[in-house]
Image (cartoon, rainbow, N blue to C red; front, side):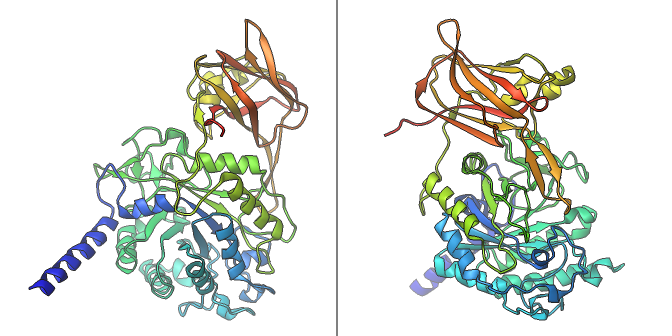
Length: 498
């Protein structure tokens, strides 16, 4: 009798875990989503045939023989993941070009047909086990090489995907996350996401499934919603259902990000996973020519922003055509982890309290007098796609504050001019603001607390050695190459220093 009782308990517990993984109407995270949020910070690894052709998106015609890393070292990749404080890997297994990083018996467009036949998926998975990290995979729905993709019977390609997903989800141990991309190339229903989702969950019950560009303005619409509009529960709809989390690569969620989204009249809880590039040029695949990385200040602020509100962040650190992560890039993410003070199994570090969010803001000018679109309130609204823009070269932005609140840090995200590179994806950002000062209102006059004749940079962090209290703070532009514009002007109160 005791053995039967224990067996029944085991069956009940196993069933409960399995049921918890399937998305159901709720206003709180299920087990799969809680695990996603606990992981919180992962490293994206873009590597494949594009790495050897200097492409971001190739069309599937590059020969498999082009893939030829001379010093392939997947263990080095995952050591960087561990040393930088990341908690999981998200590996590109197949991008839009269709090239597979494992020996798939369903295609000859893979590593097995290349000069270097190492099963990269297997090596990364093995290294994750070695270093105690979770292993996740990216798989492109869109496939520009596989003939079945263009077959009149699209069910042939669906079966092709299921065959490959079976390989990925049964041969490499636990897979914490499956990140689908490229769904925009077909009508949403053609992908048969309910079938794919259930198929995945049967193979990997704990695996969180997401599809890029999944939130739309109404049922069956193709009007994808930007994260800045995701600030009201139950306003927008899921195009791909079911999925466990939202993706709007590479956009940043709003400070007031909401989690409830609709499908057929019911509400579902969906956290947001961010994807950003280590590269200052926003390139995903590594290029032959070395490119600068983002400044640590910007990476730090983006970490705080993207891991806030129970959301997650995946930072892309791609290996180069030798098959190794470049030393200067590895050093950057390791130093970032040390600066943040990330500790294993500990809560993520947080930014200070933002005392300027939704504060009253004023400006000496607004671009074309479009107050709704470019008004000063856009600099303090918590959105990374909205911005204040000036119609004069040397404007002033004033943010009113509660004088009882203390401040000791400012972060400014400046709108930059961008030049798109030849690959059509990566870019170069150019600052407009070249000299500026920060003033606070004190005893009925402006007092300058910061002055710079350097470029503002993509994200300027100003840390003060002590606290200030003031009723208003001012950004005064002293020199600019074009009309200044600011995404976010954040005034923060950091915790007491000890």
